[in-house]
Amino acid sequence: MVNMDQYQAQLLSVEKAIHASENSKEREELRTLKDNLIELIALTQFVDEEKQNEDDEEVNLDDYEMHRFMSEVKEIDQKDELRRLKDKCERMVGEKCSAPYMHSWGAITYHNALICSMEDEAVVADDGNIDVKFRVLFTNPTHKEMLPCPFFLDGSCRFDSENCHFSHGEMVSAGSLREYTVPDFSRLSRNCVVLAKTGDNLWQRGRVLCANYVEKECRVRLDNSSTKNREQDFKFVDLLPIFEDGDSTSDSESETDYPAINDDNCNLNTFTYDVSQSLGDWERYTRGIGSKLMAKMGYIHGTGLGSNGGGIITPIAAQILPMGKSLDYCMSLREAANGDENLFSAEKKLQKDKKKQEAISARAYERETTRVDVFSFINENVLSNSKPIHQSGPLKKCFQNHSSKSLNVESVKVADDIRRKEREIAEVRKSLKRNAEGGADICSRLKKKLREKTYELSCLQEEQDHLSNEQSSRKTKSFVF
Image 1: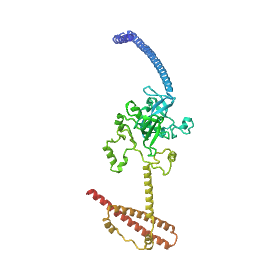
Image 2: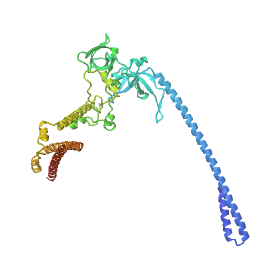
Image 3: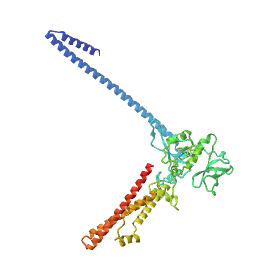
Image 4: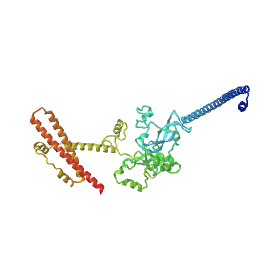
């Protein structure tokens, strides 16, 4: 860089000498020196740029090698971590745990489960953590969709996990698993809440009436059961105690059908849950007494039901199932309809019946308007020679005494008469065209009938104009006053 400064200073001195010199030979030598200096400066700049580019390439190559080395080290560390995590998770297969289950109404509950397998693929989150999925089978199923499929355990189930009525295992994240809740039968006593295994292999909630520690039996009163089979005797092995005190509160309550409530989630429930249907939406047709009573009892609009707001938010739609048919038959109908949720909807059925009734009423009205009775036949054929009397004056005076509702009815009737009269005129014209080459007597009668029909049509149109004027005048008066 110092050489460049010297060359620039020398070039500036030569230019000054050229301007100051008066000898042409000396000036020519100075110009030659100037050209040499310019060429030298250009070559020096080119050499400096080449050297700078080589230095930059060396730096970039070093950075690339360092980045590649760090990525390989990170990949090796990640593979080692994944291998250690996989070995740890493989040892967990066959162990008992407490796993979450999401019900069809959106609630999440924890139940005792058995880890039966592990997914081969692991998910790497954005923060670098590795998440593994387990397939678990619930040991205390409370609903049919949680009950393990016996054919799946034997490997002979013909359905996949989505179409089978029973469970093929629930996929849960390893981070959401909890410790297994060990049943403590020594604390069984009267009024203790338990889950009891019924005849259909489902576990139902109930309360202990008495406990026999000698025979290892308990008499339990089941909830939501018939009066006849409400009280039953169960062995201890068919019971799962649910205690509500001490350290077991959080684990035992998760075994029930009621999810644990988080106060923060309850406060944010209104803002984080997007409901597809408003709870109490049907009250737009009523005075809303139901919502008013719920508000009096402390319900906050938009939150779930219950004292802590952790219940359902989306209302349960009423369904009308076929009369005298089993639930399996109804399920087969729904499967045939590609799982249509509105197949048995009561609201959809009412709307369908309403449309059907409207169509029947419309067809009946059309039949009544087109039907020709004896009096119409006499008026059109026997008394057709008499000319109708022009009644525009009396009609206008008579319409002033009609109510708005009767005017609307008269307007509809007149419009129907006009359409019918136009059809009759069209038929007469077709007949006249068809018999144009026939006898003169037939043509004269058809022309006479055409004039009469045309006159009747003009009278009806005039009557319709009077009706429209009367209706418009009443609307104008209502706006003025």
